[in-house]
Length: 411
Image 1: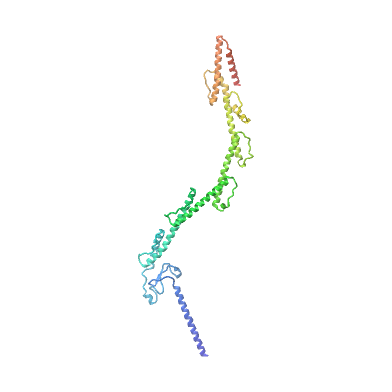
Image 2: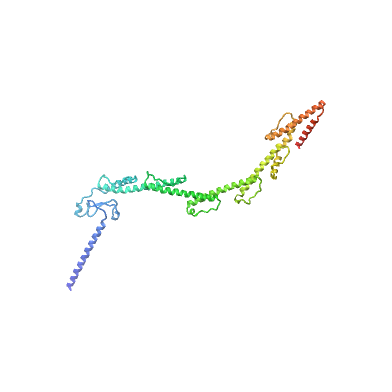
């Protein structure tokens, strides 16, 4: 029984030993994997971390050792390994300098030159890595600027080309980059086409408004806010322009009808322009009345008595003409005084108020002369009486005629 117990204990000890050994082996591999990461090491057993450094507890660009390399540690192999001939500060300085130079070369689209002979190995490694990063950054920056500049110029030129009636043609600019030319071409065509759409929309809105049709925005336009706003704006411009023209046309038509004293009729007119027609009609009628009235007024200087004009077959016109004749008070005064002035005075004179125009002066002169002639005849008759010759029959006839004429004028 005791022998069996001893054998069991031996077996258990062997199992424990095997299990413990396995755990140690697994743990050693885990520790090794935890401390290792990709990248070749230099002659010192270390290198600079550039990829996923935070994963391994390092900083980007930090130099460190692998597999017992370096100057510190507890084994004899570590103490015998030489330390690197540069520091992290050298790497950092090189990286900063390389990044600046690389950015400038990339921005200027110069050839890549990531190597340098300056300073130590650490500086050179840092320079190379910094240069590559800076070059890519500078190249990306200049490409972005070229794209923006090309798009801006293309948009401006495309819009101008359409407005000037030019063709939608784009020629490459050899002095510019491929990015610039590509962006320019795309923006030019887009702006040219857009400008055409805008122009078509303006005309469509204006034409519809000018036709005085109801405003209906097409679906292809209503879904675009800019186009819809443009369409409605020019619809209003066209509509208001046509309304203005129609008001003017109806007012002109009314004026013409009013001037010829046509029958006023608005039944066939668009109600929107009825007032304009009536206004024009009144203006035309008033204008004709003023002209006929003035014609009648002037005829009082030319005719001793009122004479109805043969050219007027409209009672309204005849009435205006007669009123104009009767309103000429100056002509009445001339007819009442000119003959008497000529009869009473041998020397010619005309009151200032009678000098209205040539017709008024001519009327006065005529009557004044008739009065003067009567005075001469009367003087001659008196002289004949005084000499005992007597009154000739002709003299009596002429005197009687002038006397009767003067009396008629004074009525």
